[in-house]
Length: 97
Length: 97
DNA sequence: ATTCCTATTTATAAATC
DNA sequence: TGATTTATAAATAGGAA
Image 1 (spheres, chains in turn cyan, green, orange, yellow):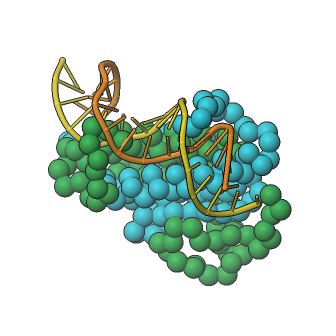
Image 2 (cartoon, helix red, strand yellow):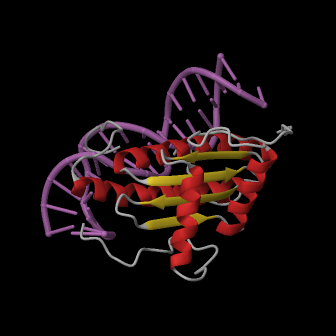
């Protein structure tokens, strides 16, 4: 989105990478917040920049609570499915809606 | 973005909420993946739907590693700053770039 | 619950201040 | 370096299948 189309691959130029990081981080945080509010979802987002800075967002229940809930959900599934999975664990009872 | 503008507040209609959740969750996951790749960031996203389903994404280093790194960064800051903060902890050494 | 179809709204790549 | 502008690329609301 912008003056030109870009390919999704690591940006080599450090300056451009930093600028893009700053812009997209803001956008991602905003989207996360919107999803949490619009859909009443419980969500946590943790981001470490390539330079080591930490940025995070957590919905109302709080980061710690969400991380604990995450661990519990994982444990219930006895075993790590895939450390780098994108969409992995789901509850055992499919909802009706 | 869409046929009409919307206000960011909880969607009361369960069906609409679910549909929006499904669509935006996908968009958020995509944005997270792009940020990780483009900017070489280490990132984790955990989302629980209002019905309890879990969806997650973690960049290449893996969810567990990122969560540990997060806890370490927090510990270094001795104490939780704000459980619901949006952007909270940062490292002590500002980078040059 | 997706998934396809678009009119619109947003996000944002580049350029500029 | 960071904030602002603006032309475009992308995301998505609403509707339909």
